[in-house]
Length: 193
Image (cartoon, rainbow, N blue to C red; front, side, top):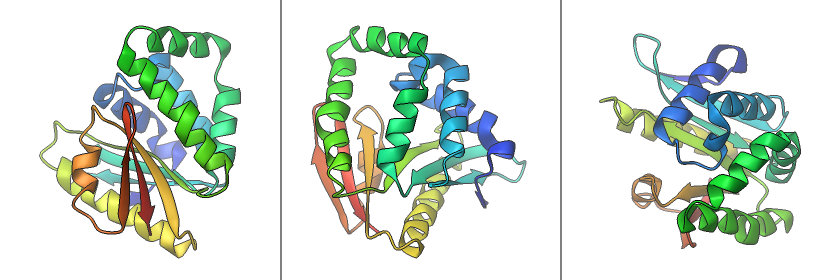
């Protein structure tokens, strides 16, 4: 079932799910505690909202977080990450070309797009437990719910960044009103709500 995200109830579970499902993500290099802090900071922003999909046993199967103010969210996150965690991210990015390209996509394409105010809403995280038989259902329900939320908030378009190592681009390619752009290590989606 789909529920509105509440940090006090879901924060630990979403940090853990992120760490288990996408350990190679840039922010995951800060560890599960770093992810917890990342989501805690995001949760404290007025513009951040989200939804979780829980099974009948109250186990988290998937979640999605978004913001109506991507510029502030990204700036807050960058300034809130501890120096030691920033160093972990830099060292990680130097380990492989793919990691370096991921950072380059963010710095050279995504941040300028958001800074230009062309698109200021962003789908920040969307993760499901691929080991669950209900993963596809959770993905579909969280996708529909965040899109409806953006539309209800008066947001006409929002951005989604997806690493090519995930299946996000395959899932989103089935829907209409989505522009897909292939970058070096990411896909960027501009989604009409």
